[in-house]
Image (cartoon, rainbow, N blue to C red):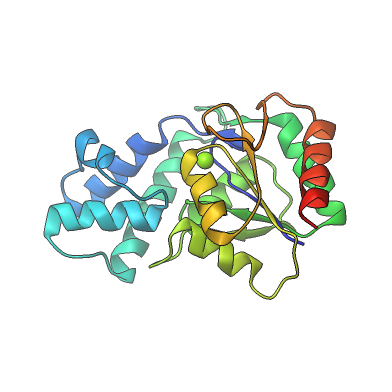
Amino acid sequence: MPICFDLDGTLGHFSSGFVILREALGEVWGQAPTAEELKRCQGSTDWEIVDELHRMRFGRGLDETGYEAYEVACVARFRRVFAPGAQAAVGYAGVLEGMHRLAERHRVWLVSGNAPELLAFKAEVLGIDPAIHRLGSLPRHDRAGLLKRALHGCPGPHLYVGDRPHDLAAAQAAGLPFIGIGDMVPGDHVCLSPESEAEHLVAAVEATLGAGS
Ligand SMILES: [Mg+2]
């Protein structure tokens, strides 16, 4: 029964991430997309967002080579900005510990909108056990498509833990129950504070899985 976690805003945060995304595209494309262009994007994954910005800039969709170039530039910038002694990422200690405890008994996946190498970098910075499965943003997949891919062939019940309305929408599209971290997702699902203790997360996940089985 896989339990899937979003990363940004759910397990911690890397501030200025969208600035870095724009700067990385500026390096690759010669001119950075504007904050207004970024705001117009509907998608929640790197592939979707960079594809939308590419269509605005060049009038055609992104291809795999263009996505790879973005990913390389973006990871390099993140590595510089979040180098030891420079800007620090913030990890939600109780949520992270709870996820690791759950991973002792369940299959746990990170299913994130970050490009795969960026997800790997962020997971490393947050101290996430490499044994926890990861699925980052793949070409031509939205978030629900990523969730379905992570769960493919695995018996349920499943669950998605996220922090934004797009996480809830993806969970619903993939047929999963949802737990929110923070208070940004309206709905009648369970919500936990980013400062929650590990046992609160574990209890909420077990209760939600039990209710769905
Ligand atoms: Mg998030």
